[in-house]
Length: 314
Image (cartoon, rainbow, N blue to C red; front, side, top):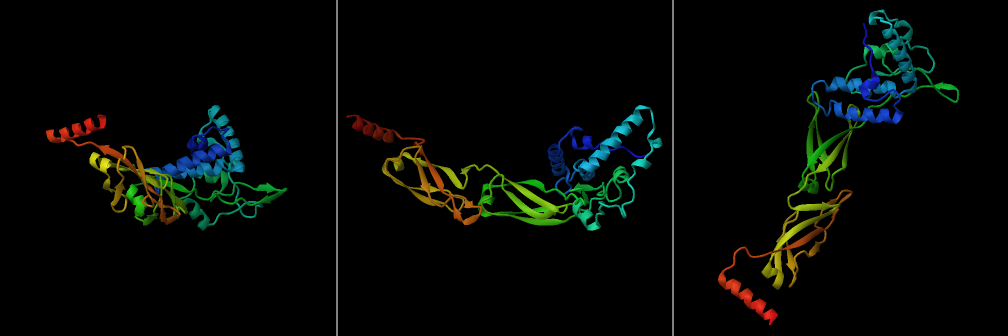
């Protein structure tokens, strides 16, 4: 007895789903269950089911035949028929040799598409033939043409890094099923949303590391620029002087002019983030001045401030 495969249910789409809706659903599920990025038990089997469903529903000829079969299967079940008594013979795919417009997929192509994850179900092979990619001819200008096999879809995997790692560049070691490891280099200047391409690492397709730069306790990032709050004591703000400013490199000294107000922003050119496409160039660092009052004042210090206030109001 062979189980019926509900490919629409597998992809979570309706029987009237458009080509675009089918593709969107497939990509979402493939990213979720690909065994290179999902180590949960059963993820590999689910990935194969999703791939099989997409191979059928993304191909107009396969989908048409599958829909016709599904309708007859439902009619057969509604009359009380048992699965074992169903006539599979007239639905079974004939041998492929010598049929115009059909294409046999090589072992290399099959491996590229499924990354060694195994073949299709008996249900699929019964309807569409061994190898799974000979569902029937397509036509162009009245002549049959071969249909190219569907390639494995690119995958994405989110990687979190610190702002310091985005500044200097970093590496991540990724471990795949079977113990295979690769070391991925993440370049300087990446931002949240940047993608690092690892060619051919997702079952023969490309794996993209989608970067997420974590918030920093001191710096706020705006493009390639950085903003930092710099505390300045009241005496330096009034009389002028120098303060130390942290950067993602080494601390620098910033000159504070006399009479600097709290809230003033000062630009330190070239001390921001390296630019992704040209890391020898940097954005700027903006120092936001924040006036800090003395935490504890002696009576004598308070008296001096009273004298200054009285002088200014005299």
